Length: 433
Image 1 (tube, rainbow, N blue to C red):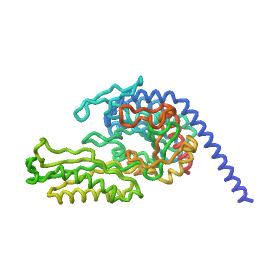
Image 2: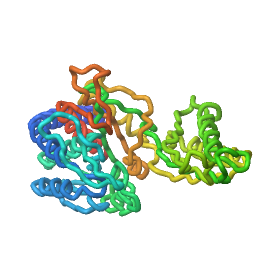
Image 3: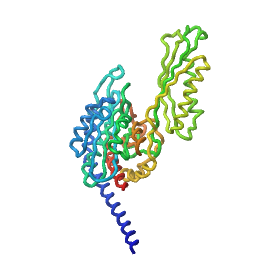
Image 4: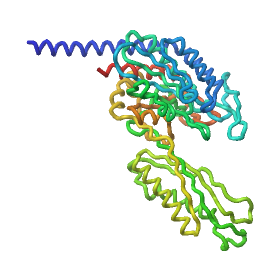
């Protein structure tokens, strides 16, 4: 009889928990809808006044001014210009971190909207426009919205919620540290006892109202390489008297592509090697002494990453040696793979179904772009996904692309982003003892 009552109690408790979570979902959805207009206004302001990496001073002040109206502990100037705000319910539970990136790009806007950016600055010796051409303005606005929703529900929640406004996702200026890597280095995870990280990225090419996710590696590791080829200078009319570093460089470039097409098992994961720039010479009739190329390496598997790095060194040095030249190879590790913890992804998938509907939650192919959310997800379990924002009336061929002057996203997707971030945090909290 005692066992029967215990079983009945467990079933009743489970039922009540389901009802409680259903009630919270309804409350979150209603609150997200209630602040949709405010989220759009925040985003438009940030879009009109963008700032580059590690220079997001006004953005930081704007975030802090609003977060001061909420019951949170605020730390600003994190990793130069970042903001971290902690909602502590005073009740036991894990610490859930929600992240948004803040920085814009050196792109001059062409989109005809009333809040278009007119900002300009000096960048690498050139006068350039500044634009939120990757949607980070919307990320900040949605996280401010999620913070609002969760703070208004503080008495119904347990645990701690950390709102991380991260600068310099696009990369710190030359000679500076920044971004998620610097936040991790400064000890944000240990200081706040973060158990899990959630993040999203708006997408101008994915249909509004849908999301793309992928367990394991969703975005690539991004490494840089520099290859300096040293030849022997001579007159252009007598190339046999010297060693032409340009011809050697051309052979190396083709050899690098053979690493991907003939030496890498692409049935395992995708990989890319791209030479983005090559410089050499000063005059049409001189075989120069040196040539230099720089490029990017994208991988999704650490073993493949290591093997490709080794093959790049071997390929470049061997081709150069065969031609009587020398090659110096320098590989600079950048962002790691953006890795979605498979257990966490499976655990939170029902939450995404609740927000978007099962038919709108889609598994994506690996994305060869990179994200420094990867530094957070390397330290604790993380889940990162793409939020569709291509206007519903647009076809796929009408979509604009990220990092371009014509980048455009639908504001109708923002409320779903607020709801998704909020419900992921609440549901994760509820799943923990």
